[in-house]
Image (cartoon, rainbow, N blue to C red; front, side):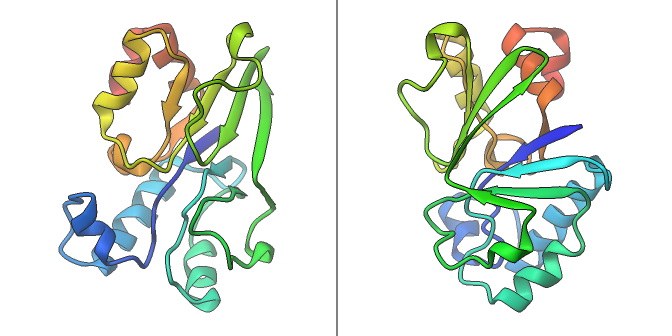
Length: 177
């Protein structure tokens, strides 16, 4: 299965206050994110991390967290991924388009107003804004095929590609997101 997430900001204690995350400290936040990740992700799954995986964390600390996480990890760089050790990931890039069951997904850390395959029904996945769940509902209600995969918009869990498709189609399964 393919999953997406963004803006974990592992190791960033101020993000708790800046985004009103319900954690006592950064250690609790990191532990919850690792637990949520491994609840959903199996070792043969692929996870696209759409930026800002860590913040001011040493390479050794980042490596210690990454080795705990299931799945193949592909990083789409965000604004805080400037000094990231690329060897920690299976692939690192700035932008990517993937195809799944004839549906194109445009992956970038930043939200775009228009993206490749926009007029052909392409779905743009992004992070960066630290939106909450209502953002994705609002985009869908306006007919905008853009989805924030960030942890703040998805109850601190990665989101599967099938969950996003169901959400975009407005099925009852989308209520699980």
